[in-house]
Length: 264
Length: 340
Image (tube, rainbow over all chains, first blue to last red; front, top):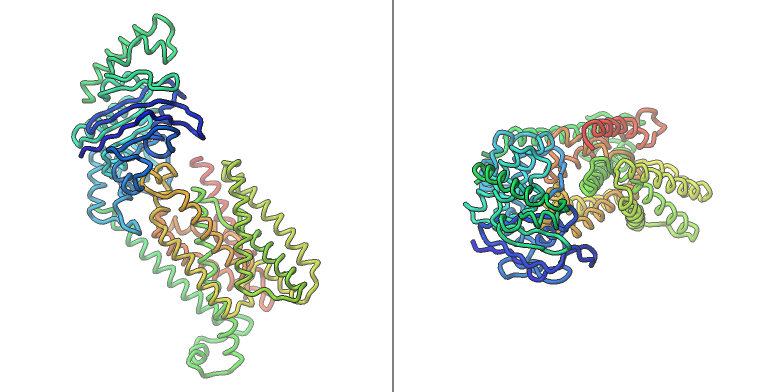
């Protein structure tokens, strides 16, 4: 597996209006890239564009040297999977069925699942530790369980690149830790390239290899968590008051150090 | 491990149950009516012996009517189910969104206009006109749905659009005094009476086409249940699917309106009842079961409409409303309490 996601001088936005411009990013197999930045900075817009949900305004998104807009739908679905902030509310659907829905790009005309497909769904359920509520109605489980199921659904697609939009928002700390552990583990074990957006800076160093901070309509800085989450950047891009940045950044890294032990 | 075995057994037994019900209702409808005919007599008739008036009643009146009930009822239920997938909401159907009334209006207008010129509209012409009317109102509802995100409000808007269409239809029917149009009144209230073999054949062809097309869309429809973004990320052609859903749903409800006028609430209530029975909303399971369910409900309601005050006939919509409105109301109340 050597699928690599790359953007070149990408401008992303809606209706020709650029929200975030001149983006040059790259996610290698097995690497976790985190996007951080204040609300409205354009993280979701960027993620929607790199997953081909939105067309590029200028520039190009590449998946293994191929322009993403030119990859056939099913082929793309076999290479890239998503966990979004959307909350589906399907009726009469068990968690196991939700996970198995990820087999879509592999099934035939009528979408009938083979025993092998169910096996893969079961394995995905096991990875997120969701076997216990596999038979439960998807609408009747907790938010934390729901996120795990959506992650399992994405894994069921057997992607080489995994894109997650704020996967840990609104979850309790224990669920955040569980979910990020799973994400990090599958990235490393299955050599899947992961790109995810996050608001919780203290979790970023524990899960991400590299971080892109988005601000001012562009990728303001890119590097290791230590290089990007600095007092200066917190003040400049997250609106922290002068002198607060250094202290908060130090606190974040200390907290992250504690989490790292449990998330790696 | 596969998913639990009981769900498969449950589904098969539900299908079998529906098929048995449908058969019993068909036999009942064949025997009962303004002149009761016994089963033995019907056996004789179908073997080609027996009295000729009875043969006429069974073969030329009751049998086509029963087949029409089966076909049109099934079509209506599938039409409603497709709309529910489209709007991602179980509170949708061709009648409550005004689509049936739109078809009714265009058919009435075309008939009156052409009759004035001495031309009788053919069955195919009526069907096409009804299809166009369905599409027109559907287009209008889609425009509204861009502005009104709340499904309940959209349904209210649809009901109002339906009222306007019905009012204009009444106006047209009342002031057109041609004797042919007297039939129009019955039709515009919803009725399966007067359907002939030619109509059965035409509607059977169109409905089978529509239902088969829907069945072969069950895979993308299933993925669409997870919402647009997830469906697209799995490889669904969203635009193509949405257009197909609208076209098929409008075709099916158009055929029904062309032959039987607007029949109320079957499209919204039957899929809901079926979902609860088979405990699944998977399109590949829902489509066959919804078709059978729609047939059963329509055949039952038509039987009651025909026989309750025989020889006077009720409009079928009065009967379906009495049985199905409570179902729709319970569904709305429960959703309100449970989730957004």
